[in-house]
Each structure stands twice: as C-alpha cells, then as structure tokens.
Length: 147
Ligand code: RB5
Image 1 (cartoon, rainbow, N blue to C red):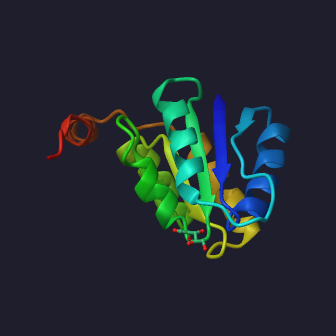
Image 2 (tube, rainbow, N blue to C red; image 1 turned 30 degrees about the horizontal axis):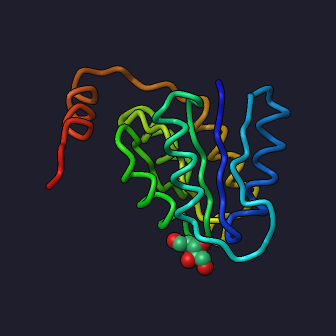
C-alpha cells in the first residue's frame, strides 16, 4: 500500500513520527509536507494529498493539522475522496468497514502521539466490509453532485 502524508504546523511533529512508523512497517510513503513548524495553511497540504489519492498515485492519505477539522473539510472537497476525522480506535475501524474512507484526518493538538499511531495502524489495516448496504451508502456519497 502506498500512503500520502500531509500536515500543517499543528500536525508536523505527529506527521514525522507517523512517517517513520509507516516506513518501518514497510509501506511506501510520500511526504507532501509541511517540513517545519513554520505557520502554514492546512488547505494546501490537504489538496495535494487528496488529489494524489484521487489520481490513484497513492492508495490512502493521512492528514494532520491542529484539530484535523480543516484538513478533513478541505480533503472532502476533492471528488472521490472520503475523508474521516478520527479521534479513537472504534471510529478508525468503523470508518474503514462502513465508509471505505481513503483519507484519515487527525488533530495533532487533540490526540496523543501513541494513540495516533494506534489509530493509524487500525485504519491502515482494516479492510472495507464490502457489505451491500455500505456499498449502497457510499454510492450515494460519491454520486452526489452538489449544487
Ligand atoms: C492552525 O492554527 C489550525 O487552525 C489548524 O491546524 C487546524 O486546526 C485547522 O482546522
């Protein structure tokens, strides 16, 4: 599995540790930045990661800002992206089983690092359930045109 990572200054330090962790686990990882603690706009990293997943350059994306909220809202603007803002292990698993989410968003100022790593592992390792009712619901998300 190929995983794209992105963070703003609020998620930078979590992102660095998650990157090491995923590489140690044998995943191919692309780090789209940010590369320091200097203040940045979360939007720019969310778009880069989300578009790279949309374009199938990477299988999944992980985004971290201070709260995870800006990242998840921005990523969900990209067609084909289903980004989940996750704070615990239950929703990390449920959003893979039920929503087949392709982007995980977390808050670096909300979740302790050890817990964030556990969330990453559960989210990466859980396969979509492929149950008919969940497929139907995902089609309603992806098929919604807006406007
Ligand atoms: C940056 O201060 C902060 O607003 C950002 O990291 C994120 O929490 C936005 O949703």
